Length: 496
Image (tube, rainbow, N blue to C red; front, side):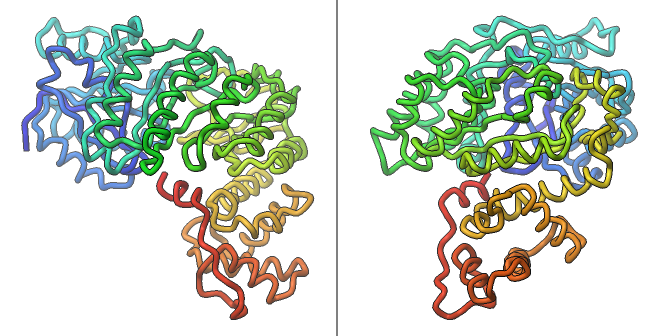
C-alpha cells in the first residue's frame, strides 16, 4: 500500500459512479498533487473496514466529499477515525456541509470544512496544515476562480473508470434559475468552461475508449451555440463510425428548444441521446411559489416533439410535496406527462436540501420534513402523512414497473385513460399484498402484475399473454404467447 500524505475520499452511491468532485480536487492540487491520491468507496460497507483501508495509506490529511446520500455513513467514519487515529486531520467538503454547517455532527467531529468551491481553497488549506501557519478558522469559504484557471480533471479517469463506470463531465457550472428546492438556486448565473479546452478533453476520453458521457450541467441548452458544438462533437463520432456507438446524457431546460437545436437532435440515431428534463410541476401557482420560471405550453410542446420527432430517450422529473400543490394537482401534471409520451417519469418526493430557500415555506404550508437525510417532506397542509406515504410507494412501484422498461406493453394497459388514479390503485393493492417496496423478485412482480390485470377484468390468458410480451420468465402463460426481449432502453437503465 503506497503511503500518501493527502487522501481524497467519498462514499459513492454505487461502484459505477466515479466522483468528479474528487478528481477536480486532485487535478488542482498543484505541488501537492504528487502526495495526493483518491480512494473511493461505496455506501453500505462496514465502517471499521473502511477506516482500516483509509489508514493503510498512512495519510496526514483525509478529505471527504459529503453528500446527502452519504453523510450518515461518512459521519461514522469520521467519528471512528478521530478515535483510532486522532493525529489524522479531517477536512470536509461538498454540498451537504456547505450550508447550515454549525448544526451538523460531522462538522463538530472534523478539523476543517471547505464550503462551496474547493478547487483553490482545499489545496491552499492543505498546504497550511502541512507547512504552517496552522489555520485558525475551522470553516473556510471556497474561493471561486476564473473558469479558465480551473485545471480540468478528465485525464484522471483511469482505464478502469472508462471501462466500467459512468464518466461525469461538465461544460459549465451553476444555473441562472432560482428554483427554491434546488441548491443551484443560490448561483447567480451559469459559468462556462473554455469550450475548446473542454472539447479537447472529451477528445482525449473518447480516444481512450470512453463511450458513455453524463453531463452534469444544470442547463445544457442555455447557450445554444455551445450546445450545438458539443452535440456536433458526438455526432461526428457517430457518423465516422456508426458501429462504435457513443451515448451522451444532458439535462435540458424544458421550454428552450430552438429549431437549430431540434435539427441536430433529429440527426442522432436511437440509443445515442438521453435528455433529463425537470418539469417538477405543471401548476403555475406552485411554480410561482418556488420561483420557477417555465413556459408550460412550450415545455409540453418540446417534450411532445422530442417524443415524436427524435430518437432521444426522455427522463422527465416531477416532484410531489411542493408547497401549494395537492394530490389532485400533482396527478394532473403526471397524467399530462404520460400522455406526452416520455419514456421515463422520475417521480420524486421533495427534499429540503440544506441551504435552499424552500425553507421559507415551512410555516405557511405546514411543511414537515424528516430530520434525517435525505430530509424528505413527510406532510404538508395539503398532503397528510398517510397520503405522502402512499405517494412514496407509488414512486417506488413506478420505478419497478414503468421506469425499468421491463413492462412496457403492460404499463400502457395498466394506466389506461386515468394514469395516476389507475397506478395509485395498483400501488395500494400491491402494497397490501406484499407489505414491501424493496426486494420484490422480478418473477414475483410479474405474477402480481398479471394478477392485478385479472382483478381489473382481463381474462387470465389475455393477462398472461400481455405480461409475457414484456417478461420472459416462468409465468402462467399460454404456450403460444411469445416472450419478447426487453427494449434496448431497459439495458441502458439497468446499466446506469
